[in-house]
Image (tube, rainbow, N blue to C red; front, side, top):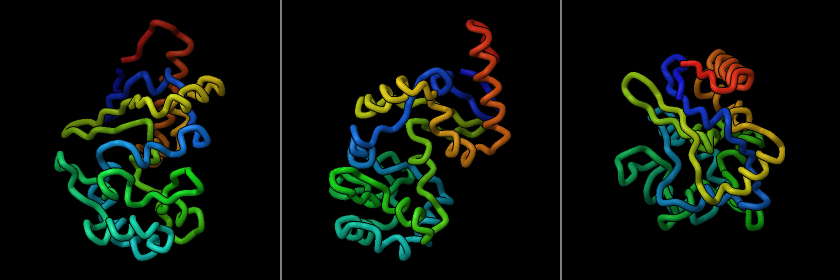
Length: 195
């Protein structure tokens, strides 16, 4: 772990490799698990605002779940998250054949909305936990992502490079530039850790 501004960052995001392999996992992260995608307060307002625009992209089951539960919910732990369909699929999930995709992102890709998707989804496999004085930035290992780990290793793409756009979205370009400097230092000086 090392500190970067007001974040404590796991070295795993610099050292582990990862590239999503949708052809292998079929977007399982959007349909497996026991909770919706984590949201922040600002994102709940965005979802409420853009829902009429993204609704045409969603499945009827997703629309039913959102209209019954709301565009966002409080999860079992009290955190803000996306609603689920029958405690399984994210309500915003759509399918291209057997592959799960994000209906919000599809609307974004077509220029209907200017918000790509929740930052927690965009960041995955990086998870950010906000505390009072700092945020913890960690690599989340999930067995359904084994194909992504294998592809990342094959392509030699570290986690932080795979989620570059999302990290800049969350923390800013200056923070990311500092992260790249730390990554270079760690590569050049094995065993020497910046604190």
